[in-house]
Image (cartoon, rainbow, N blue to C red; front, side):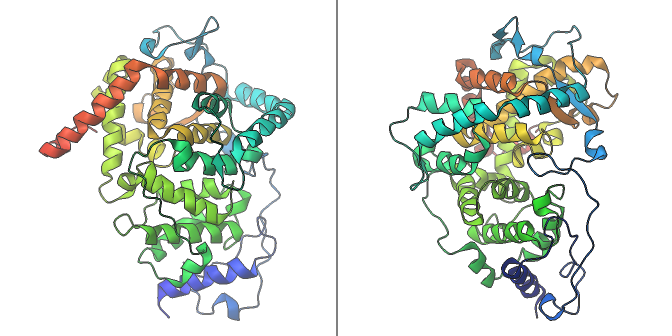
Length: 431
């Protein structure tokens, strides 16, 4: 049996058979260690379980190591000054040291606020149900764009996220396509695609166990979460011959699987590829990613010039620190609750929103650079990011998205990059 066939048969077997203590058991490795006896001929069940570890409301393990990671707090004062939101044109951060609460204090406040938000969540859920056509999985045609964005920036209720992301990513809700809407979708059930071989199956199998392993859904080897993740990534590797599979797909697919069934997750992944411009982000050479780096560099030079100069003098191009930010939609960079809010905005407004999240982060690091967290600037910008106030950061991004100066800078930078590519001079750029 070919290795690729064995891998697909193994995932298909566990997808339909299931595994006991999914989320608790470690599971037995069959494909990466190339067991001689396949699982369907081995009746020995794995009973090894992880130590009882508390999980947060989203299913992530709450371990001491996680709480003790080097973290930079994004102070609310960077986005709000005397109750007024700072405009994007005035993003030159002050040289004075900004008040910065401790990460422990911010986590404590965030947990307290989450416990108080149940009534607000219920109210917002009712509003979102009134805006979404559940049968068509689209935003209703009578919902204005302004109202939609207003509610997106306030945060989509957890109960509605899967349906809302599906609706927002549809061409009708998104309004326009950055890549040209192709209206194609794999009609075949995602698990049936396992009958088709992919040259990327071995690499996908290597990556699946290390993707979001800190979540109970993806913890158990060949558990439901890992099997569905393999199926979606396998299907994506067949979707576009040019892109095939790249590691940046894994975190995005896992994020979607936490909120919707595998078939819908695959549909949204295909829309990311076709309509959100991720075809160029994923394909060999990552030309779409290089384009985003160039636009980000221009945004920083225009709106955060001091920190842009610090990064340039240190020899740090955007590719050195922003690759994971833009390719995986801030996976492992922001707290999960904040990352979901970023996904809300990304689903509604596309990749421009991801660039402004980067600007929102770096303009605060500009001020906090003077607190001397570390002498290594790359370590500094690579730390875990913890916003003191998600609402303040997202509201600043919303205002920046509407700012003519910001939109002009983005449009001009994209046009300039296109010309550089046509002239063959893009390889000379510091991105």
